[in-house]
Amino acid sequence: MSEQPNYRKTLWACYLGFITQAISANFAPLLFLTFKNIYGIPLEKIALIPTVFYLTQLLIDFAATKFVDRIGYRICVVVSQVVSAAGLMMLAVLPELFPSPFAGILTAVVFYAMGSGLVEVLVSPIVEACHFENKDGMMSLLHSFYCWGAVGVIFGSTLFFTVFNVADWQILALLWALVPLYNTFNFIACPIERLVEDGKGMRIGSLLRLPLFWLLVLLMICSGASEASMAQWASAFTESATGVSKTVGDLAGPCLFAVLMGISRVFYGRMSEKLDLTKTMLVCGALCISCYLLASLSSSPIMGLAGCALCGISVGIMWPGTISISAQKCPTGGTAMFAFLALAGDLGATVGPSMVGHFSGMAGGNLKIGLLSAAIFPAVLIFVLFILERMVKKQRGSN
Image (tube, rainbow, N blue to C red):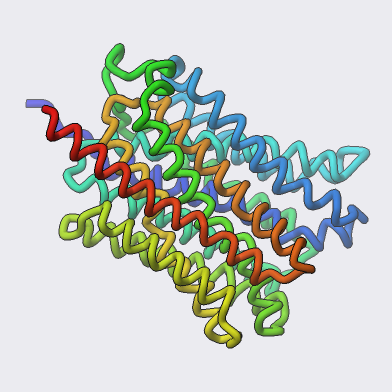
């Protein structure tokens, strides 16, 4: 009688994979003013750092549709951790070695963004392929670790800079690099299954011709945009609405948002067997619209901050929920589907905050107007969920 694989090891490795992605996405932004002060890099150049990070992720998401199935999950996910660790170590070293510190920083960003993009594509299908009974709950709990990673990076870095000094940031970069370095060995040893058997996954061409697939892509774009529009502007909104300092704004804005988003994912992970996923997402979509309206239309700073924070609860289930719905409604989509979903999520996470900034600029810097425009994303998400349900019922009726 063969021994059952220990998928808990796989789950732990995937948890640390998302924490690694959170480190990659959130550590460098904490150092933007430090880069300006130490290296004399102007802010307009520093603004290119997140652009390069997310653009690299988008390119990796797209490229993964071609090479992941050929190379295999294990090799690709191990490479994701190695490249992430290398990028964080390069961030500590290359600015001092390169003639242009900014070129050294961007080189490091490209490396750990490549690792982050691979994590985003691979970790969800790896967990989906494991033989767990409660897949929806597992997926939601898995994605909560990105939130806890983001909170950990903010608090851990703040504590380090308080105890030591911001000038010692290179040491902290090397310490954060230990997380993906350690996790490399977890992914080498843990059991990893294929999502679909060889030859049974849909080809990219067939996937792209499927109307259901495009609805799932639109659902993921709206999920990414609903989450990132508030997450990216939470700090600036909190500062402008309440007049607090940047440190307090970071803790009361994006940090509180991430905590509540993580809590909502853990809650759904525990209660998913008792809740209908589509109905839960519909409720979350309606709550998300209410949060954006509260943040943008309320004249009270406290109510505006409440809208910002509660938005974290409303968007928590959207990204992992979309992945679970996609796996249920398109079970033969394979790795290509997950890669395209990651691409769609990143696209939404790029478009949403950009739209908020654009409409805020058109309104003379009024951030509330920009946030009001972002309410369109959860509204479209609700509309798409209704269409998906009608499509599924129609298919059942014709069978």
